[in-house]
Length: 368
Image 1: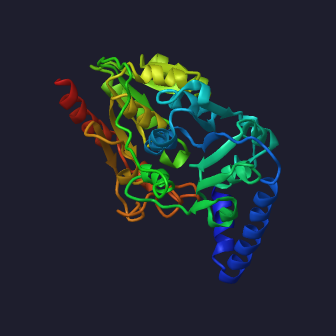
Image 2: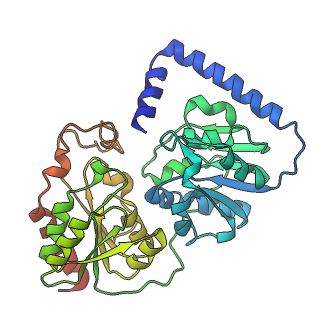
Image 3: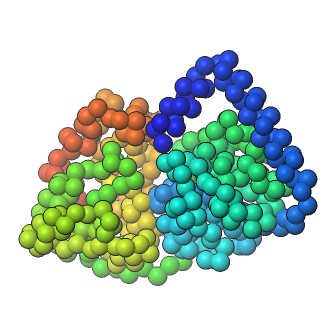
């Protein structure tokens, strides 16, 4: 993603080259769309393209809810395979189309013809792009849909009948509602009609979407060790992300842990906790969705744009000079994805600081 961003910024930072590039791409893409629509085909369905990681999948819920209110429940959503259990919480499984991981290429930036075949089989009349990167552009550029709307980089504008560039808004949720608000009334998603269980178990989720958002695993284990002295604590992690020596250490220290093999497993386990402690990550957003308390550790991302809605969600952040400012979603290194020189915002946050705040929060919600 960082190489793609740098390449795009290199091209668009040069005004003359930028204009030539935009004109050429507009001409080519509009010509492809014009020619392809001449081929007779029955078009009938509404298709949403929402190819995201777990946390961003949940951020699309306001937009998805608005689309369903406007067009009805029979809307197809094309998404990552890991996002299917998330969308199943609010949408019919029959209308969720997952794209296999081997259909993605070049660092997940490009979808091959097999993915386009999946889309074509749905006979889309209207396509709504809530992804906004080259990945979705490679999927929809030669679609025979009558109407394509959504947001993306300016270079792909020629694909769309109604195009929006990236607009941040006041929260990451608004990235997706801003893409459609001029054509679809926005109806905010107000929570799940979902059975949730209530226990005193505390889950610790030590991983995140990218490494610069992750507080040290060693520190998370020390935190679990200290909390575990008098609380019901377990570390939860994807079975593919943990080494055998870490598992052996947890066993030696008698720290409970849970290995998940799927997002469905993750949802089920989170549903059986009271509070989830983690990084700015998908598990935190899932916990919030299920009505759980959350305590998040922030570093290169801004909690203003990522913290879940409601009064059950707490955070800690070590502010340093290069932390994102009040109106920035990420720090100047694109949240660390462009290569942070020191990771000071995460490395300088101590176990004592996180422990003291977590104890304060746990006491307030469990009346210890």
